[in-house]
Amino acid sequence: MSLNLVQAWKGARARLEAAGLTGPVIDARLLVEAAAEATRVDIVTDPYRELTPQQEATLEDYLSRRERREPVSHILGRKGFWKIMLNVTPDVLTPRPDTETVVEYSLREFPEHAPWRILDLGVGSGAILLALLAERPAARGLGIDVSEEALAVARDNAAALGLAGRAAFLRGDWTAGLAPDEFDLVVSNPPYIADHVIPTLEPEVKDHEPHLALSGGADGLDHYRILAPEILRVLKPGGRFSVEIGFDQKDAVEALFREAGAVFVTTIKDLADRDRVVAGEKKALETTA
Image: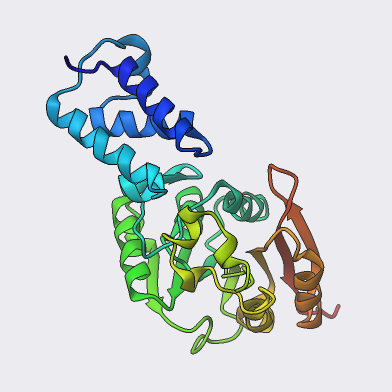
């Protein structure tokens, strides 16, 4: 006897709960929707619609993979971020709601029709840069990453979102080769997890996310030591920056940017009330009357 949508969803939820996974209700719904080619509305309005044998087999595969702690984003190959949908592979970090704090703050300071130039350092899937470009049609952006595989994902996402004409992607070592005073806004979600912490992370992260995008050195701050002066170098006078941080890195990262010459340095909390983004400006040129 074939499963219907409501049976599939309840059964999936029970399996994921039994596996001890966090967020089993949402994960179950997403996997059932994808396997059954259904929507959330379908599950509510047409709960007794039967799955085909192929759809049941697909759902079984999805659930088995999730029970082995493979992230839903890798199983489905996509993840929503801000107001856009992104392709995701094991070569990039899965975009997280915490990182939307970078986007929210940047947009707050970003005039709607300003033709700003944006630099995204460690662009990964393109999440931050593409979310900003989708909201600011006059802006253009450059995304840099050391991983050619990540850049391929970002380019595909830019094309799928119709943003390829305003986004360029280059392989590079942070800001190496970039001219000074070039960008109005620099954003980054650099690797910031201390190396000794990585083995303690959830399997979804330590076993499936690229370690290159996680490792921040012995204390998690290695990349900020490079980035703080370099971000200030490539920003135009009066330009702004916003970078994601770990929950306990506020004081250290703020100090690094102040030492590099940044002004108006502040930290923004995420929706869970955790320190999440350090932001500030490059000092504007002084004008004489």
